[in-house]
Image 1 (tube, rainbow, N blue to C red):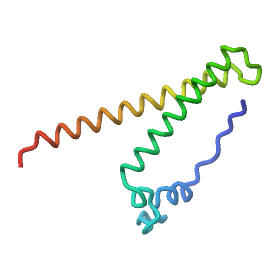
Image 2 (image 1 turned 135 degrees about the vertical axis):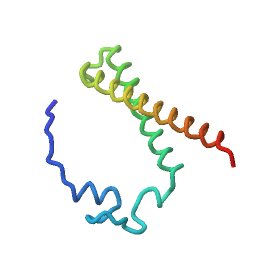
Image 3 (image 1 turned 120 degrees about the horizontal axis):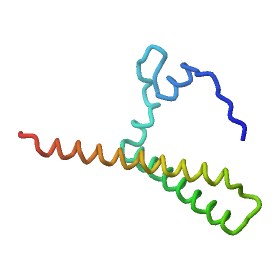
Image 4 (image 1 turned 90 degrees about the vertical axis):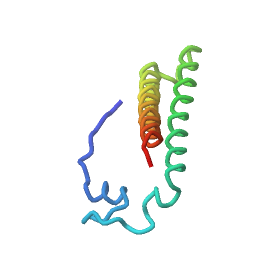
Length: 107
């Protein structure tokens, strides 16, 4: 597996974030404006679920001695799925904590 690091392109990163180089948001181009928080969370959870499904499938293929699936790729896929799940769990915990704090506020 060949791992190469690309130089960081600040202009590209800013454009992906929906900002101009001076930090001002570009109207109508941010993903949050397009679909909102619910859509962003749905996409993120779908991505984590897809990673877990792919890792499970690769694990089954390795157990069945499929020569086209390597053990190294399977282990990497399993680690990616585990990291994604842990990140999702942390986000859920933070959201529950924020909800609890908001509910305990006095109006």
